[in-house]
Image: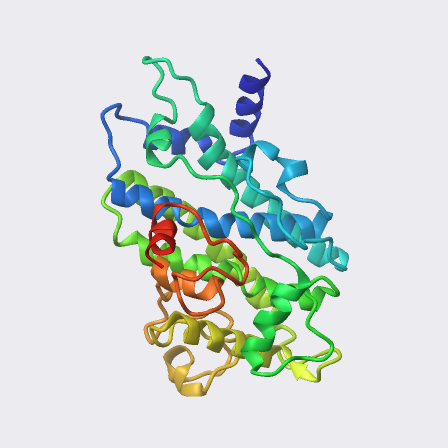
Length: 324
């Protein structure tokens, strides 16, 4: 009974959950190709990252306290903690965190615990779509972020960058996360064969894009402000981080900071770059391999490290670990 109540409450709080579920579950015979399953499962690695980073940043604790059923028994993140945030930033970060939980509850929790009656097709398609996996080990420590930022600048910053020490630092650290997931969803979408899969990715991409846009807008407002105590502008931080992600991905330009040369701006007419896009102002796309090269921090999808000390999970990520 308690399980049914929890599922019911989740559904009540999911916007348009009935219409979305009906669309996904119309046909009992609907199937999702294994290639779709793999592509849909892979982004859970980044979504776990985001959920834990945003929850800890806003509240000081993560999924183990808020929604332990969604961790799958995976290890708690290393080094994550409550950030020193102004009320406005904390409010936004908490909204992001709760969005990540809603995503998991509809995408993982219900996939495991819906009714099994043959007469009940409610969310059966979601259950067939992806089973998910336990939360991978995440290193969200200040030291882990400092290593990434140091790599972006090519020299160690002094003092080491601490994402939890201020609202500005936290937003810069947040710049690292949703955009990588956004490019992954864009990259996966055209490879998906099932309408169910494409519908799900479209919904996830919409929220991920929104989160990235909010983060970029907040940073863009202070693009020329210098980050204490480094004397380096916010824009330079974003440009360096974007350049690092391009370098690690090994596939050319798929990332842009907040201020770009005029010829790279929209229509080649402006330096401001609050939304990143290609020459046609379309979102860049990345493959799972490119994403692993970035989040592992070493430019090699076969070598774990960075924010994923033991590697990411899911069939795609594991295939590279096994081939290493």
